[in-house]
Image 1 (cartoon, rainbow, N blue to C red):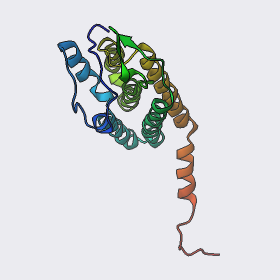
Image 2 (image 1 turned 135 degrees about the vertical axis):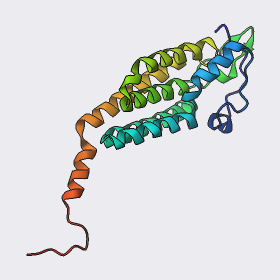
Image 3 (image 1 turned 90 degrees about the horizontal axis):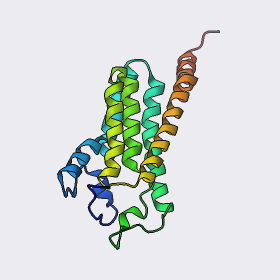
Image 4 (image 1 turned 90 degrees about the vertical axis):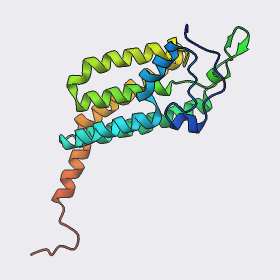
Length: 195
């Protein structure tokens, strides 16, 4: 973690929701990491996934649109629960207890960046090479800048991959398409039936 500064306490709810609110940028490397990982922030990731969902829905892929939004919501909920339940043994740097890492598994930025990449690629497949490079940079910078430990980032990546597989399975199953087709076949309530 060559660009790492000694982290303080875990971020507050406000710091988690507002992009770059009280961002501690001790050097140029950390500033680059903040900028590159910004799409993995809670509010920014929601906006990006929502934009991809709109494009998917307009393209006739309502299952994928709903799936990516659900993946983001479920992933963020799982992250929050894990950070309350999973406590690692204390980590120290130069004799200082790194309190922020006590409950930092999995990395929410790695998780949400993976979901953003998956949703955007689903909506705009030509962006795949660019998003693959961006996600690789996010993963590397989260560790290099000292925002997360490697195990935090791997946990976020695995959760994102699992949720992405769920979205693909949902879209392939056609469950939501089938429900929409059934609704279309039902007569409207209050409509007169001819016998």
